[in-house]
Length: 130
Image (cartoon, rainbow, N blue to C red; front, side, top):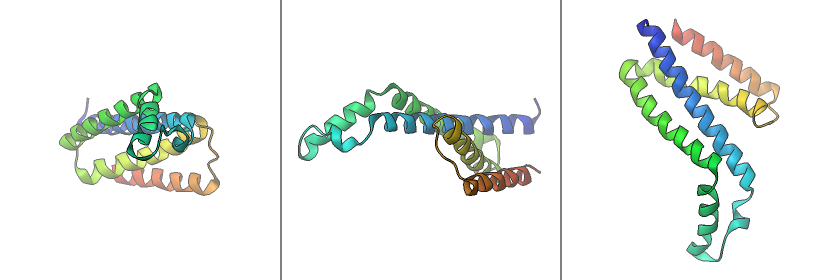
């Protein structure tokens, strides 16, 4: 595998982990609804209900694990690629992936302005790679 292919493979993997984690966490939180209704009482003890509900959600736990793996994968990416490439590339690919996942996985309405922004980000990623 060529060094540049290896770098871009790692960057894509880091972005995919971030997208998966964010989509799973968003889906879990939507499924739970308003956390205020899960409060179990007044004061600090009242926060135990929402905390239990969040930690009992398999989607949330898997999403959090994806985000933790994303952190360590990003450390690896930074060990093999320049920050000036890896940082913006990971962020922009994550942005583009989140827009796509929001539309097709979460069923969100993504307006033309967001698609246009994602297109410009994609162009930026292409310019970074050359």
